[in-house]
Length: 287
Image (cartoon, rainbow, N blue to C red; front, side):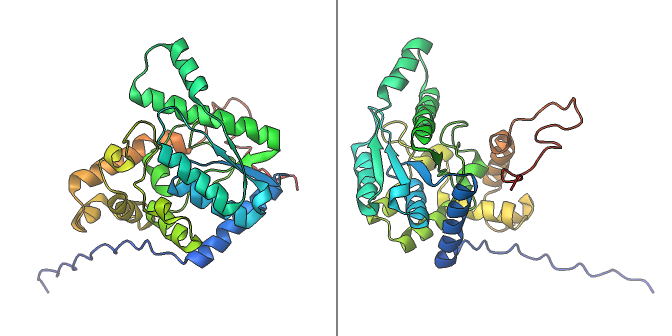
């Protein structure tokens, strides 16, 4: 019998679903912060409070998990930082009743610039991010605390952060939540409305905006990443779902190009038992 086999209809890619059960998610993340902090032999965390959505949600989760006396918020402004950001960070401290300290990083950053010579805007932003992390890790030793991470899944996948700067932490409760999901969780937690509604910014220079730097809105890139990463659809299928082909290619290339930020340094193997290759026990392996 001869004939032409009918071509199966092409299935449309699934619509990316970013909805979360906020109560269940909060319970999971509270348990994560509590267990990971105690497992490492600590009882407190330090968190950099920028006045933005992510650090606010992280602070709320930590306070619910450990109690206000076990959370130290660090306000780390630079001389060009927005006064509104500092006010929002102070609002978070007041709402949670946590311990707090303000450290002006201007002398640290400007001292580096004087020693290193002229730096551009991007390099200066990296220095600021790393200066903040210097203070956070210093205070983590002073208070016997762990550094709480605030990078969300969107930022991690796009590499939108400074290596050994704002991407550094001992534990991160937000790293598997896209920006939209962090916002939904923040609304459920009841964080201050001005913070919930504000334009996302790293506040690295006046009028800086995350979305302007990325060249795409969080709403759009969250949905695209949910298709490419979580649903594992092909770039062609993502384009057929209505995303511009050039945007799909640009986002994929950025994810590939920033992979080095999401993994530990690659160790050259010359022995039988090599760290990160053969010796890969979790940190609580001895218990």
